[in-house]
Length: 390
Length: 64
View 1: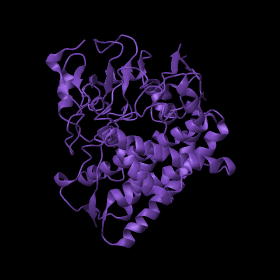
View 2 (view 1 turned 60 degrees about the horizontal axis):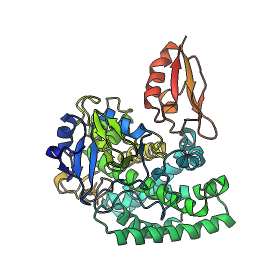
View 3 (view 1 turned 180 degrees about the vertical axis):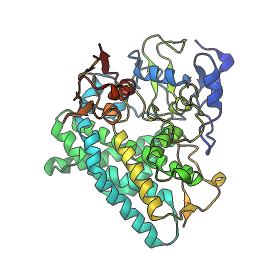
View 4 (view 1 turned 180 degrees about the horizontal axis):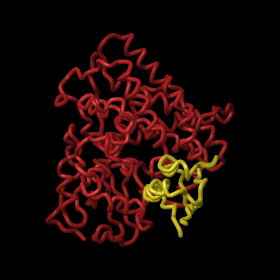
């Protein structure tokens, strides 16, 4: 069904701060879903109401696999890699194929395991803050802290040497930028996979207590699948956490009464929902969502930031208010693909905010909020840099 | 008396139940849900109901 009267262009330009795009309120107020036009020329359904987003993410007639015709991409090429090139990219697999990946990895991401990891995360955070303080009284908080902390944490967890941070960062950047070309994306993917394949050979000979060794020991995946899954974990663990951490810094600096309150983390996850356009879907059978018929082969983009600002579910949804109960937000998605690393993200954000503001209480923005360089072109929303001083 | 039932086969180990109703749910070594208190007290029921709603794989139910 294509009601061209309500055709809109997508993605929308992000407003920076405050967030999200104010068109989302208009979209939610419409009946059914929003038929939209992508830069690729494809038309897709945008889903913006909370209940509809949860319905899309749990309906077995709706697939996560780009192998199906009509699967959307965001921007020119962005979104989900070709499954033939990255076979272990398990968020692009439907059950039951998806399940062996998830089952092999969940023991490493349980509430208890993440709790045990807190001292090592604390150590990473402390060390970065030592570095900030030793270097003077100003910094780019993105480069020196909010991008560095998740990168160090996920590298250690996967068993990837952190000296190669620049190699990964440059390539991941191309993969998470909407305007990257197919060739740029393809080359970045090949280089990351080549690196990880070599690392896997090393881990086969000398296993450690890292995730690559865990995946090898599980015997649930081929070597190619392990490199793809490792690539996915590396990007997912880095991009979303780093961007949410950076954006949250602005909000806490603007609302200092919430600094040190642990409820701020959950509300920041809801408020920014940085992975707004990450869960892409396609209908494999005709299906009705929110009173709208979606035909088999039509692409669907459930917008989690729009769902998390739905005032039918969250009162005064556009306000940052940690005193609300925000636990039912869908920033980590919903359904079988809900973020595997969500407790790790919570722990990193909690430790980072608490420790940074405790040790540098005079921290302030070095430029006005309006001048901050937001990631307008990012698949994941965030900040390019965050100049601060103390 | 209400009883909590978990479908371990459907569980994807997201751990939402464990952080929402820690008196009632835990994860085993494989990360899969374990009901530690099948007949939760009245005081724990609001958390249990919240966990039912939050479970992303919809693997939890309450029966009478």
